Image (cartoon, rainbow, N blue to C red; front, side, top):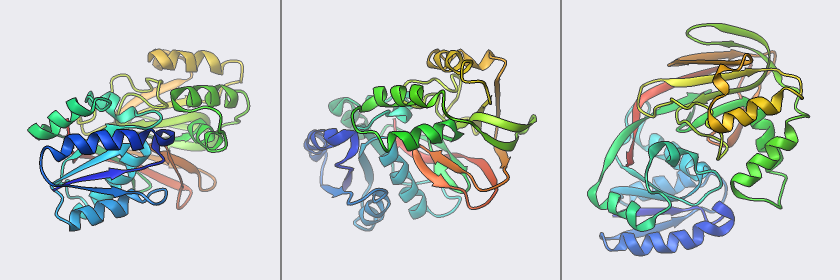
Length: 296
């Protein structure tokens, strides 16, 4: 049985139309059951129900947030430290749809994506963990969280344009955060504008934050931008659209499998665009190699 998990609110309702097309295509492959989310994060419940019902494939229609919560559900079903055994197919219908940019799947083409499901074309990708919260594309602290909080309050834009406009508005007002960032290669103390732990290469819909990041290399790319004056910031962010920001004097880039952030107090962070609060002042970030099976 193929389980189709749908977040009706994704993409400001675009997921509804995409779900109808996906369901029609997937029914040609055999039994199909649809599970609609009832609230934010409800994808985890849907995954558990689908697995109890005997799902052999989980297909999700939604954006990065929907994928995030589906992955959390799959990891919970698999158990701690165990790779997932049910492949995940993504039909993109969200705001940024960042993960599929790194996957390189035809996630916006229902027929082409369904063909991949037909062939069970799978690969295993890494899963990152920040404060034990899993993420598959990226997790971030600082400016990224500030933009996310502002986006949750805006209502007149959608899609990539929403992120870009909101980021530009926040660019001159955000003060940064103070912490010690400990990586396998170095330690950076003081004020930071943005810290990203990237599994995929793109976030925010348009920023190539870690141009060389690989989904299955057993490592995360850490990109840290130290605190800059407001007037210095636009140049860095414009370069990030092209992925040429890493040679800026304010940027630090490294790869590794474990990182630590030590702050004076608990911090907010985002994982795949979903906002969380840390459990304490010390946040550990790690990666589990090839833990998630996806249709690719």
